[in-house]
Length: 413
Image (cartoon, rainbow, N blue to C red; front, top):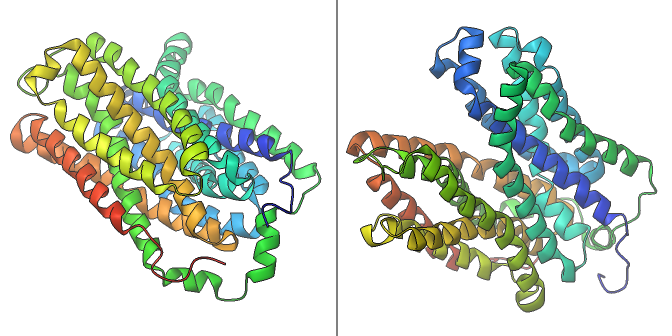
């Protein structure tokens, strides 16, 4: 079917809208993390209470990814992009009014999370339903790079805006602009001619009632969810704890200080942006419709190079340390890009939104779990060494689990 039908030219506009919506949601999340103490003082609440803004956002993302997947299967990606941008940017834009009290600010924050979840549910459907096989690896890589880019600029941009404006509520409203760009592009998509995708024609020919129920009985669905859980664990713990590990005073961390740790993390961030594109090109040229090798590679690289961060021979030699940071950043970003592609290649298109929504939504809880376990490990041992070992072991378990990532029942029709 892919060979007999042409994929629409507007597919790249769909990708751009989806990528910008993803970037906006990630930036909205990180914008609060950078200035949480100031938000706490502004609302006259304890910092522990202010942390509600962070976990409530992630909780909203986890559940809305699942809901968004159902909407994507029913109404298509352009409408879900529109809703994603409207809710996330709308929540950010409301903050100058809603941000005067904790309760109303929390409502706006949850709206941001819901919109971001709707954007994340689109990864697998866009890359595998809107693009031909020869472009899917590249698109997966570009999505991964977009997410990494938003993470790299989210912290400094929000901090700079807050410093210039002096109001976290106004800062939020200004950052919402990127979300409204996605909204406008999605509006254009909604009024354009809606072509039938090759995957939709294939689904029309082969689908019948109960297709989603059949997939609920496929063990690969649950294996992929666990793999996604471990991937989210690695992503959150690496991004949030690696700079703290390097900057914290000895014996808690390496004692490099904030500025040195921040400069070293630049190499980590650049690797996260470039590696998914390189892996995507290799995916299309070499592995083609088999996305599992890069999931293997991602977990293996993470497990090895995260553990190496503990060795004196590495952290006392800046060149060796930079190499390890580059490989760790590359591993987690390649992994994050390969999983939605794998899902798209191994589940039928008519249920892809629902299936990927479940895998990504439930898997997203791995991030919160990883941060909790890391916090416990640091407190229990008085330093980051034990926490780093746990993160490396999680990657090793993920690597071993990939051996079971195959369909146990008939391939999708």
